[in-house]
Structure formats: structure tokens, C-alpha cells
Length: 380
Image 1: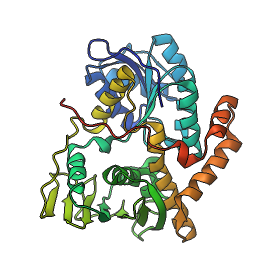
Image 2: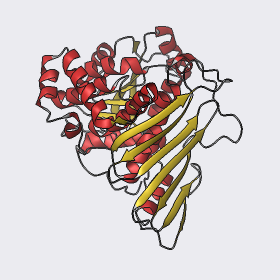
Image 3: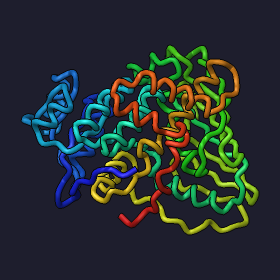
Image 4: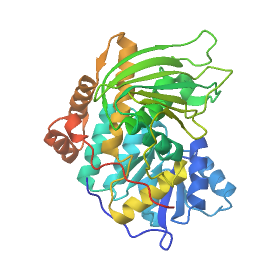
């Protein structure tokens, strides 16, 4: 998908608003103010006192704040927004921004539902504005190295992730029905798609809540996905798993016809095979700072970044397929989940031009086909 470009970069910083002054918002505020290619134009939050405190903490007590992103952008000359609101607000905030001529860099997930994600993909098409999701772990240089190793294993039969952490975060996560699957596992699901260069075909998942859990919903899950090409991706994790905790990136293993590759999530991956890993470029970017750099670069050049809404939506489809399987106890076809979400998006869309764009799609999966191959990393 083509999108509008903006002359921006270190010599002409992009003026951005950070929308959401919660804990993740604080990280984005620090990142934006430290980056040479961006300038913080204001902070938006429904809690104006929280926005003012954030501005003061940055040493910018006179920074504009407000509760409406479009209004604050109009008053400050902001050129883009970073949407760090809670998931249920992602769709309305991002839609309003796109149609106000503001490209958006959003926190994962794209939206609270797959239907809303499809609506946002169509809204990006209609508005001509870039919507990129900060799937920040995609830019980990060690993940790029692991991907290079997989290229030397021949056919990959199995890819696995183990994830065990025990955070006490409070707030909405501890009240969700499927906190691990919905709020955390999407990182691993998205990384699996990147590593394999393949999208999901089906999902079988069991979710459960250990008796000692401090979450209201199921904080543990085991899922198996069939991926295009036949590889099985298996995820086993818990958000109430104290002791011998894994990396936040999880622990990975790929088993192929010529050997295996392993990654502990924190250190360099290891190839255990009678082959040499292919020489592949590594990402010079990392974490949310990397996502921000890529967003600005894409706005400047018109390139389609990893995390662009169409490409990233299939990661959310994996989440919804896993949740549906856990709910029903049945193997779920991802196309069935996509088709149901597409029908819902068409039925509920309130903007006629977005509904028309959705209706023009050959299918949900067809509309989400890769816009371009993942970009090769370049030197920083």
C-alpha cells in the first residue's frame, strides 16, 4: 500500500504527539524526546493531570496537553501520533487520526478485535496515511540472526517458544479473560511469522488458570499452529510462572532437516547443524526506539515497513484463532476467524468510504497479503 510521505528526519524532526500517559506512554515519551528524528509536540490523555505530570517529569512543564488527539494536533502543528492508549481505544483514536491527516505509530495489538483491525487497514487505504504497529520485538538483532540460521536448516518441521514469567502488573491485564494470549503471546506469534516467513493456517489451543494465579482470566496457555508450508509452531507459556523464568522474548528452538537452532531470548542464537549459517544482514534497530526510527524512515521514503497494518493483522488473527480454540476446545481454521471478523467489520463499519473499501476486498486474507518482503537491514 502506498502512503503519503512527509519530509522528516534528523535535520527536520517529525513533530509527534504521544497519546496515552500511562506506564508504556512514559517509555514512549522518553524515547521520542531522545530521538534526533522526532520532536515531542504534546501529550494527550483523558486524565489531564497525568498528562501534565508527564510533561513536568520531562522538564517540559509548558508542553501542550489535552484530551483529544486531533484537536491537540491541530493546535500544535503535530504531524503524526503515537497511540499508546488501552487496546479498546486503539480503533477510535487511530481512525480519527488517520482521517485528520495524521499517520499513526500504534502499540500492539492493532485493536481490541480482529474486526476493528480490518477496519483500520481499510481506513489506512482510504486516508492514504501510514498506520504502523510497533511490534518492537521484530527488530531484535538476535531474532534476525535466528532467522538467518533457519534459512540453513532446510525444511523446518517444528518451531517452539517457551515463555514463563510472573509479573504483578495490576490494571486491565489482571482483569482480562485471556491475558497471556491477548496481551503478551502476540509478540511470540508475530516473531514466529517473521522467522518462518509464513502465515497461520489453523490453531489448537488450551488455556487455563493455575490455582495460585492472581489473574481473573486464564494466565497460561499451550497452542499449536499449523503454518503455511506445513511447519508446526508450538507455544507454551504462563504469566504466573515464578522460578526459572524465561527471557521476556521467550526461549526458542527450531528443528529442521539439517539440524536445529536455539535462542534463549537474551543472548546470541546457537546453530546446532552441519551447515554454516547464511550471511544475512542484521537489524540495526531494536525495541521501540527502532520502531520509531523505521516509522520516520518510512514516512520520509514511502517504503512499506514491517508492522504496517495489513502485514501485522495476521498476528492478531493468530491470537483470535487461539482464543476461539481455547473457548470451544476445537481446532480452528484461521480463514474461518478472518471471514467472521470480515463480516463483522462490514456490518459494523460506520464510515461509508471505509465500508466501501472493505467491500472491495476479494477476501480478508487476500487483502492482507504481503505488501512487500521484509526489508533488509542496513547499517545504522
